[in-house]
Amino acid sequence: EAQVTQNPRYLITVTGKKLTVTCSQNMNHEYMSWYRQDPGLGLRQIYYSMNVEVTDKGDVPEGYKVSRKEKRNFPLILESPSPNQTSLYFCASSSGSNQPQHFGDGTRLSIL
Amino acid sequence: QKEVEQNSGPLSVPEGAIASLNCTYSDRGSQSFFWYRQYSGKSPELIMSIYSNGDKEDGRFTAQLNKASQYVSLLIRDSQPSDSATYLCAVNRGGADGLTFGKGTHLIIQP
Image (cartoon, rainbow over all chains, first blue to last red; front, side, top):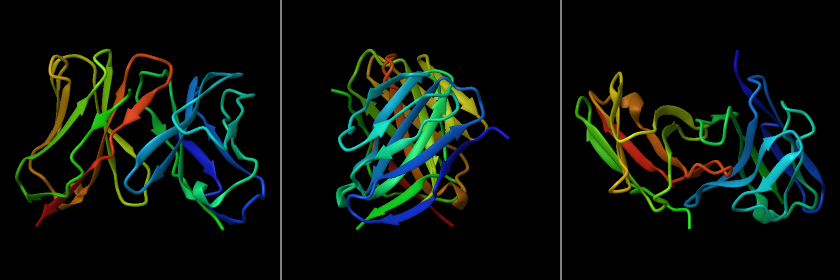
């Protein structure tokens, strides 16, 4: 089954404790992206990747890092999480930047 | 400036009627247009893609694109209570930065 898998689905943690949200896709997609979704603000892009070792900032990259060492994986790293990063996070992938994106189930992150 | 605008709603439509959802975008260079449906707490699900001016139909759904007016719409015929959700309009300018999403329209289908 074609899918985008995110882990964990839920996480409650404390300010400053480094965390990584993993994202993996099995569709051989070149393009991957991370979004956060907040009430009243909609979906906002954090980072995207056109291919292995090619990443770029989206609209709200501050406080986040990503890497793309393999085509299927695109982890999101919060090196020093803060409460304003409490949000619902989605990973997505597509065959190209102008193609429809397929979303993972989301990760609900709470930073206390 | 990348902007995609939608009326947040809620838009209330009787069951069996046509629901009409609208979206405008600011970048004339936009090339790809998508409608997603999102149930509360769930991930966005692709409903329609449209790339050229005119109408595109898929079952009960019709997407309409007018690039001159920078306007894209989604019509849902024979609306069902299961269509109640937030509908997200997404636009790609043809660049590498992917999709820009509107904030969504909350649709309620009244039985």
